[in-house]
Amino acid sequence: MLDNNTTEKLLPLLQRYKEKVITIQIVSYDNQVIATSDFVYEIDDFQLNLIEKTDSQCYSFLITFLIALTLALLIPFLNKSYLTKSNKELAVLYSLGYSRIQLIKLILAENLITFSLCFISAYLTDALLFK
Image 1: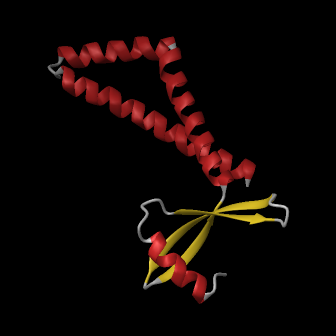
Image 2 (image 1 turned 135 degrees about the vertical axis):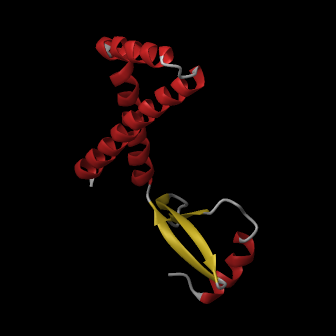
């Protein structure tokens, strides 16, 4: 916990910066870093609130995003039956009078739904396995 004197010194400095992360290092007498912590800070009512930000949270979100992106790309594009079925459906829709822009929006919507489902499943798997 920061005392009032330290907070009063830090507030004017922190209000200038757009980056809302503070890195605090604990250093021994011989100048070796013992521990490092990142904190996200908020300033409200002239009080400094520190929220610890762990690297594992950032890494788990990044891993989840990469897994979801990989699955979302692999599922529709490497499955040949999906592509032939999709091409036939798009040909029928085009012959019924749908414009190319509408078909592109349809393809994007399908891929977004696939990515969203992969992202949710990867996030839940990551949350269950690594926490």
